[in-house]
Image 1 (cartoon, rainbow, N blue to C red):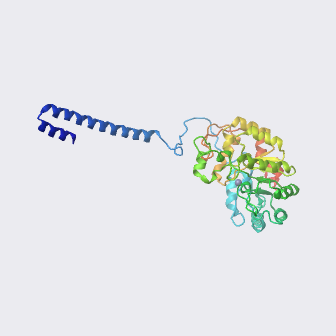
Image 2: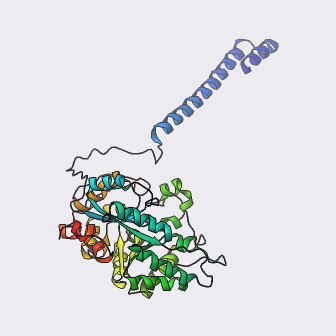
Image 3: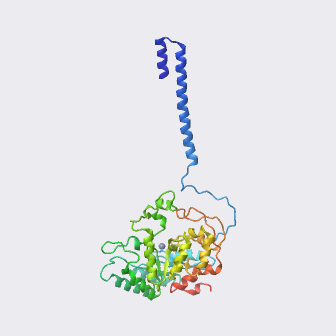
Length: 391
Ligand SMILES: [Zn+2]
């Protein structure tokens, strides 16, 4: 356009070839500038395509060649103290048994027994089919807490459930998170209205497996510094804050208050009490609360990233930690065996949102393995058939 304008201008002004030449030069410069800009944008685009990658997509195949010991079953028969099967009353248990046998799981503890008729139905199914392969824990119904006889009724229900065969009590994380009393107020884990239940468990000789709060990073800003960034992206409802419903430290403290207030009751603090990433702190807590036990369900990746520290911890507290897995996925158990039993290095965990890092084996001694796999559970959970296990 400018070029033609300049040409016209030349004719009118009669300045001739010089003007035409200058206009021609200007056109080339504009063309070059546009061309350069296009090339620059294109190369930025190509660069971005090649060099930027989604964190979720990045899964490099390791080129490291080191000894590997892939295990399909555990070295000793084991008890999984942390499993959930809500339909155990009506399901065909043979399917579970087949999977359990493949990996050497002798006994499974189903923590989702409910109470009353539902629990009884589960016990009936177990007793009629595989009486020595399953232990069922009862759950408390917190609905109506604050009402006149809630504590008495809950204690009575628990007594009935234990009479019907419950081997323990499981408390879900909803206590401390979402459970509200009849006035709509959050019920703290150490609410005194629950005290009679904790005491009753001690009296009945059954353990309480309790999950309180969640991993601490769920309370941190959801940014690039958060180790659970991916989990919070994939499971945004797990995000917490100091007011939703309370600070992490507070809920954890409430739980410890219960342990301290009821020294005659044995508590299995689920998921290493969310201190798998700080075993020195967990050791302090174990020392301060001798009635606190724990299990490794869903926090294996914390141990597998600090094999020396973790094996020292498990050797020191070998009488207090049990095997647990939480989510029922038979394919995932071999990673647990490999972390606990082998000295393998730099191998994969099975869930990136829990661990984007690699695992290292703890190479635990047989005596410690036996305790974690079954001896500790035999000691604190009543009703398990000891004949299923070696001495
Ligand atoms: Zn669980």
